[in-house]
Image 1 (cartoon, rainbow, N blue to C red):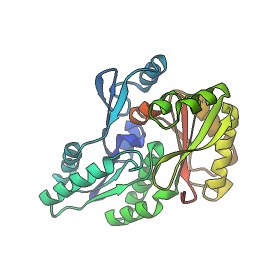
Image 2: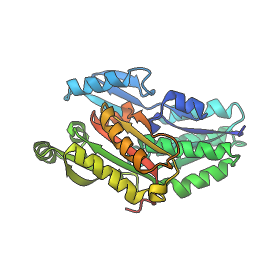
Image 3: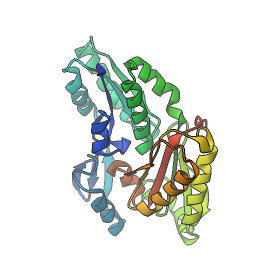
Image 4: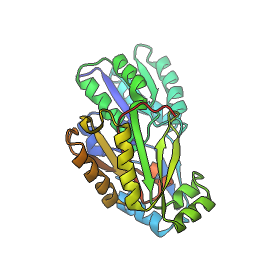
Length: 297
């Protein structure tokens, strides 16, 4: 067994069971909805179905999120440092959240208290189950016997190879978060536009294409994957997806991929978009993640 802990935040959007099975530690973000504070604890405090139904029924609801703070990170790290374990923690993309800075600050304090321990912090430049896919790949390396430094170095070298593709059929919460203008959303709604988005090399979510109709954007998402995925139809790696109360749309994308990439490592894992990221996307978002060409723009 490795003498170090792999750690991330709940925003990696894998299930509690997945984290436990792969022996990946996590620390929770927070969100506030209609004046009540919740932990982003993988659907334990509030089931995802209930969360997204509340957003759908109340588009003007006051919902906000807060990142893990320095004190929380320090307490999380010390759980394992007190057990004599080193720790490698990957943060949600700095292009989306300031949590990377908080984790680094907590690590500085922890190193003073535990000078004999290694506390390594990496900016994943990834989000949601793309962040989760990267963590799962690191767990594979750990289980192969790689050292904490070797796993850290692999993460730094390969994190931009984790490709992210998103589309949404409901732009309400993208407008609330300032990612899409009200005028663009109104125009898009009239024309049934579903924007295709990705995460760029700086870790920011970027709208790339305006596509008319859900069936068309599903086909375009698949085509874009085939342009970017490692080894094209011969891809043998993992592929994850997540969705916010639109499972059938995610399953439609997954069916296309599984038919055209028969060498895929296992069936596509479809997760729920967690409550932190879901507070900004709202219902109706489908996301796809895989290992491919390095993101360079």
